[in-house]
Image 1 (cartoon, rainbow, N blue to C red):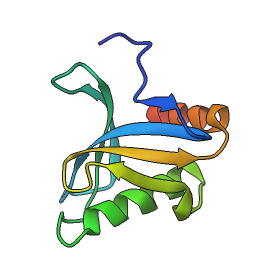
Image 2: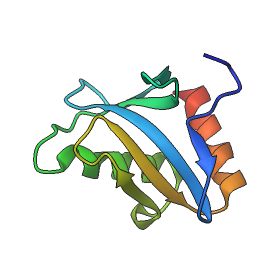
Image 3: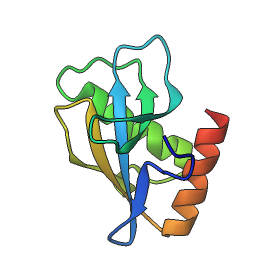
Image 4: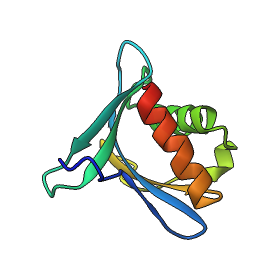
Length: 108
């Protein structure tokens, strides 16, 4: 994987973020970056919530909103709601969101 690749891109007054989610983990954490079969870079996350009745999706929105200091309404799953690989729309200033995501990756 090239080090310059990011799991996000600017889109619609915010960022599109690609995530690979592992539910039922022993703790909530960022596991860094991974690539999917098509070579796209994804943010690897694990969450304690089970993938039952939308619990993992809700936990994902809550976790990212908290970590990125956004309102829950600024984090929306736009694709992959029933998949481990999800696309999220983060609303806000793209450069600020990118800086927050980069800090999350460094701290994670």
